[in-house]
Each structure stands twice: as C-alpha cells, then as structure tokens.
Length: 371
Image (cartoon, rainbow, N blue to C red):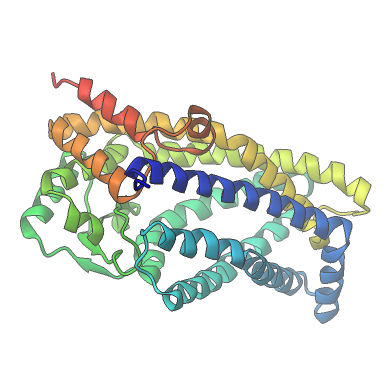
C-alpha cells in the first residue's frame, strides 16, 4: 500500500483536531450542566463557605478547586490532543515527562490568574449589581492589555528558552524592517521550540517597551533568510495597521456583548435553578455556560474579522519585501513543517480558522504584482 501524501496526512491531522474540538465542546457543556442539575456546585459552595465566610477567600477556594478539578477532568483529552496526536504525526520532540511538567506549570499559572480574575469578577458582581457586566468588561479589557504586555517577558519564558539572536545580519535586517513600520523593538530573540516541537513559528510580541521579535529555532533552522524576513514582515504589518489596537477594541466589544448576554442568561436561569443573587458563587457554572455558548456562537464572526486583518497583513508584507517568491516558499514550508491542511473545507475554515487557508494565500500571492 502506498504511503499517504503529505496533504492526506495533513487533512487527517486536521480532521482529528476538529473531532477533538467537538468532543471537548460537548464535554464542557455536559460538565457545566451536571454541576448545576446534580448540585455539585451548590455542595462545593457550601463547603468552602463553611471554611471561611469572607467572600474573597470563599471565591478563591471555590475557584482553586474548580481549576484543579477541570485540569484533571480534561487531562485525558489534553494528553490525546497535545501529546499523543503530535507524536503520532511526527510533530513532537517532547518527552512525556516534559509534557507533564508543562502541564503542571500551566496548572500553576491558571490557578494564579483564574483565582485572581474570579475574585475581581465576583467583587464586581457584589458591588455593582445589575450593571456588573460593564464593570467586568472594563476589568477584562485592562487585564487583556496587561497580559499582552507581560506575555513575552513573564509567561513565554516559563515554557520556552529565549536567547538573543546571534545572527547579526538577520537581526539587523529585521530591526530595520521594524523601523520601517514605525516600531521600536527591545530585541530579536531565538526561541527554543525544537525541544518540544518540529513546528515553526514566529511572533512580533508585546506592547510598548516589551515589544520584541521572537523567532522559533525550528523556523531559523529550516527557512532561508528572505523567507524569515517575509514571515516577520507579515507580523510587523499587523503593527503598522494598528491591528493590535483593533483586535483589542473588537475583543472589548464582543466581551461587553457576551457579558450582557450572560447577564440575561444568568437572570433567566437563576429563577429556574433557585439562586437568589447573581453573586452567588454556586451559580458560577450557569455564568460559565452562558459565556461559553456565546463564545461558540461568536467564534465564526471573530474568525472572519481576524481573517480580514490577515489578508491586509499579507498584502503589506509583499509591499515591504517585494519578494513574492519568498512569500510563496514560506507559506509552502509552513504547510509542510506544521502539517497544515492547505485547503480545508470552506465550512471548517469559516467556523474554526482565524487565518485564510494557505492555498488561497498562495494563490493570491501568485497573482500579486508590485506597483
């Protein structure tokens, strides 16, 4: 029997990922519904309230238990999707111990951030009343901006080793490219991805004084310099277009809408489930369910907005580099190295992809002509 082609393997890989997404979605909904109707959340809320009547401590303990329980309940699916599947398709270099250690670090980070966010959210619910969704939306906006700024300096180094790029000509070339789009970067870094994956990636990460160019060693080792330049030109085009600000603004709008929808759902469900106050932590699964369902429904719209920005970034990348051939070569290498489906089903692309298909991007670039 003939070996399957690269694209046949990519389509199978994509199909399994999509199936796991559906399974995780259904699993999440069932768990939240079960917590409500089998009164598991009520039981947990009563237990932690007996430990301390202080609402801050009450919410913190509830949140910590939920985060740990969620991690354990989803561990088999995480193993299948993040470890087993990546090894099955030859995309991972990570040992089982390394994966487990990353899961522990992720759990610790989620505990810290989730408990803090939940405590602030329920403080707003207690103090603001019917207008809680506005206060919560403002908090999530500020939180998102802060996390975007801190990501490359505090969070990313927890999982990947970052070192200043030693290739001085490439570093200079990318720094000059950043200056052309009006960006001042703190530095150009090599990210040690190869210890964990064979996939290639790069980023123009951070905000303000934390902004830096980050190149995966898997990209540096496999891509020619002009291909790396055009990949980073695409990332820098987002900066030139103000896409970070636009994405934050878009996210803020959808967050406010989602929180208002959750507020309506929370009040509708409270009367039927016997909850008296919106700040009752026992009703958290109802709030989470409303936000989760809204996120699913809004996903195609969010992805469509993202794809529109990606098209513009592609155009600017070609204008900045005037190197159509390098762009096409880079897209094809990304498809091969990351085992990406060049032409996913249009419905799948519409629902789940925040980037246009690589086949459409390549076809568009082939028709591109510089002025």
